[in-house]
Image 1 (cartoon, rainbow, N blue to C red):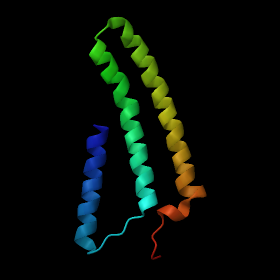
Image 2 (cartoon, rainbow, N blue to C red; image 1 turned 135 degrees about the horizontal axis):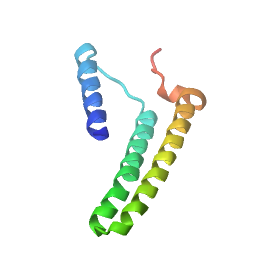
Image 3 (cartoon, rainbow, N blue to C red; image 1 turned 90 degrees about the vertical axis):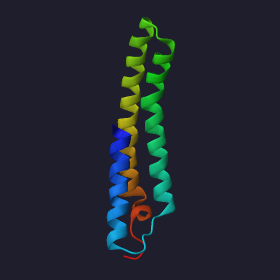
Length: 99
């Protein structure tokens, strides 16, 4: 659900940007940062679920829930730090080069 929503929004943004602007420019450092965060969130959300579904043991279910909760807390902290990174410390990476 999260990935499909992100991909839908990104696809719509590319479509709208291509419709209104003939040439679109993206900062490589900003895009690489966002791709890294996306990959980290996919692994943090997916790996505990895949692990439990492969083992199919009831006692592992509670452990998976604990790992998922800690992964969620970690992702919230990383997202907060990313906002600080994007808005305060490295704001120039995410600004338009022309303006």
